[in-house]
Amino acid sequence: MRDFRVDITEGQTQAAYVQTHHELLDLYWRHLASDAAPEMQRVTLLPRGSRFSACGRARARNAYCPESSEIILEPRIIGKRQTLSRNVRQRLVALTILAHEWGHHVNHSSSRGAFSNREENAADWRAGRYLAWLMDNGALSVKDFTDAANLFFSIGDFHLQSPHNNPKARYTAFIAGVEAEGVSPERQKGWVMDTAETFSKVRAANPDAPSKRVQARVYRFEIERGGQIAGNILSGLFGAASCALGSADRCANSLQQVGKARPDGWYRLRQLSLDCVNRSFDIEGDGLRRQPIQNDRKGQAQRIANRTCPALVADFQAVPLPTQR
Image 1 (cartoon, one colour):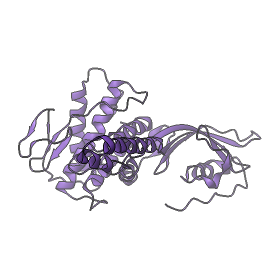
Image 2 (cartoon, one colour):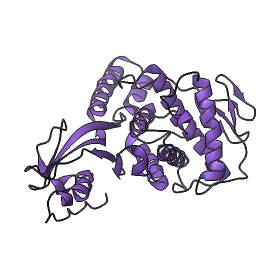
Image 3 (cartoon, helix red, strand yellow):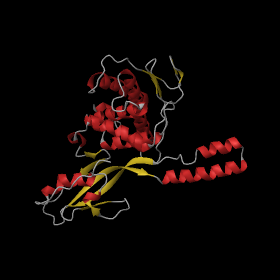
Image 4 (cartoon, helix red, strand yellow):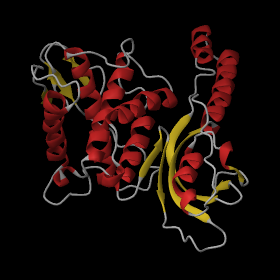
């Protein structure tokens, strides 16, 4: 499985990396998944610019043709905001989109699983399962996974036949697949998946230290609405200008876009400090003051405290977990 890692680049082209995962996806869904389909039709991965033999020219850069079991993959380079090399971005984008398109094939051949009424969400769910399986087998680190997920969510409606919802809805389906597959902490060098939205790696605590504090690196999935608000304001201004200066059709089209800007969502890496004696926690850079452990709406601080504080404070009482939202 080491040969499938994104950081193993020597002697392997982008095309070879994609082809390798294409073959591994076939192995996973045909023989290894809990709902494996051994009789599933073979998938042909076509080069970019190709035409489907049964569906004609693809209407999107990345698409699946159910009639001929073919996939065309032409991922764009996105996510320049991230501190990733171009080569790593290419591979992570290709990996997640390929896993998604393969999800369509498995849906068509078998079922939509947990998302019986939503084809696109079912494909995201299956993509999450495959990436979780890669993590659990050492082919994908937690950092690679969060980088891949961030790129995947930023793509947006790349599948034109049935557009996705906002990044949070896409994330919900994707991470449900990760949870369904499961990730063993032993395979991730100390990283633990605390909740559906968080990972943590706790530093070794000193039981003799008077502060009884726990330090951890954490990934937390966060929704950023600043771009959504700005986008809606600009759409409103453009719509008003079009109505004042343009044709009636242009005015109507512009007004239809008002309010449709969507929020961004991504994993952020932060530092978490937890005080077992005072039962409080703080996350560096989140704009909030130190607060009681039970106030973490994601439930991560509670789980870290319940795992680590009993070894530091003999009479530590478990912190109640938040109710599911």
